[in-house]
Length: 247
Image 1 (tube, one colour):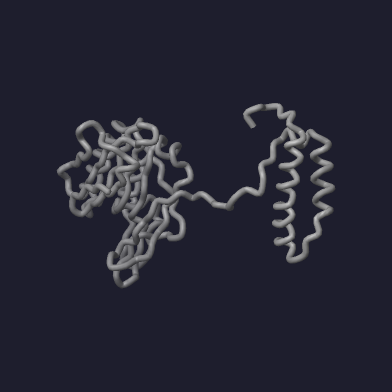
Image 2 (tube, one colour):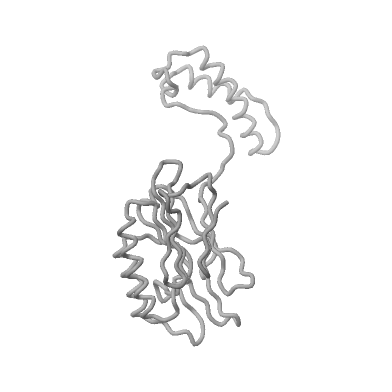
């Protein structure tokens, strides 16, 4: 495990996933709250750039940051490129609710303009609506986001953000995870050319009705599939006229 730290940001990565880009594995700006890590994604040899930010509280300083990040996004448009963490800005008025917390429409406009001009996409967050909470609970906002470019989105199209449980911080942690459903092992493979074989259709209909299994409907269905798998395997060995020898 390697890590890069520039207060208050931290990025950690496994060496098995990424390697150094040339001789330089870390580059960072002098501006407070910005950490940039470049590397090579070992799976395909493509450059990957991850930016961890803690945007300033002063509005004009945030706008300067958007210009810097927009230039970086253009520079890294062919990389897997992402910006994550606390943007200190919201994209829509609905991302902020509570008492005595104003909504700066000009700041919203500048933030949206930055995202659009940089051709970035906001990763969807599931589970939670807000990421920042005032200690007394009277206000909350969605300040933490993950913006990625099209290259990143094509590489990992099923990634989602998940909001974690709050602890000592007034920010909720966010986790990037693959939104892939694991339905377990498949009962059997079915190739379209089998359906053109009358012997296959007759086999399935005849065998399915011949199985005598008791229990709940879901259990009977599962057990019938297991039995059918064996009978199909036997049928396939007798009908080896496969249209594709690679199958």
